[in-house]
Image (cartoon, rainbow, N blue to C red; front, side, top):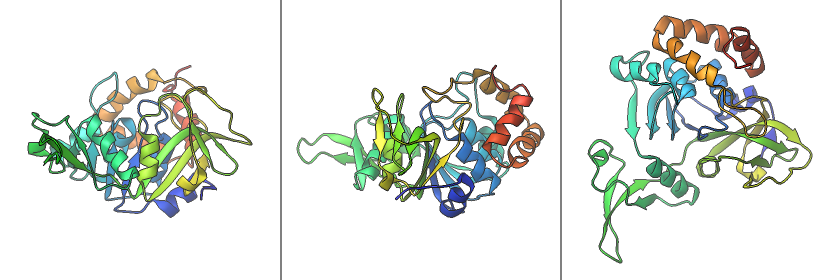
Length: 286
């Protein structure tokens, strides 16, 4: 049952070295605050899972948190490459990084299988592609009813899944609306789950296409206003394109990257202090 707590305490108690950790959010509600807290606490040897690794995984990889990445697309959306990710693959800096590549459909189906307590998922999407040649977690399977050859992918059951959402109530029920991506399935498939939210309200107000995840899904809920920045939170703030563009030159250079992380993430106590720090540097849209 979810406990409304401090993010630092939630990460300290629920995220361990060597864990498989999923931080999900599909262009929307990306759990940046939680990623920064994992970095501050110096977690290592993580298997990072995410459909679309972008800036937060670039930062976690560059800070040496990860030993493996399970993903379906990686980049700085609308800008270009993730340079810390590329450096880890091409040069083993700061540590070697193993990769396991899937399609969006493959990743989504793996989460669904995990959430459904099934050992694997079946889909057509990989038939005729080269991904099965380079990804050992894709295997052919024959339909027992039609004889059609399909592809199977194993379920994802992260040790910890972390999502950001707009609201929780005082009992720990969590409400998401807008583009919800695979957050629901990521939370339901995990052994432990954390939600960061913009605010805690007395009662959740219905919104169109809203998903409410009950408190029993989560081990901890933490209030982190603007905790998805630079991504957006529908109804709270917009996507910060200025930040995505500003990240590219920082991520390109090892020394610039380390200096930036030491000043704005390691050198701050929490996400609120971090946000004031980057806003003071002009990296936040007006």
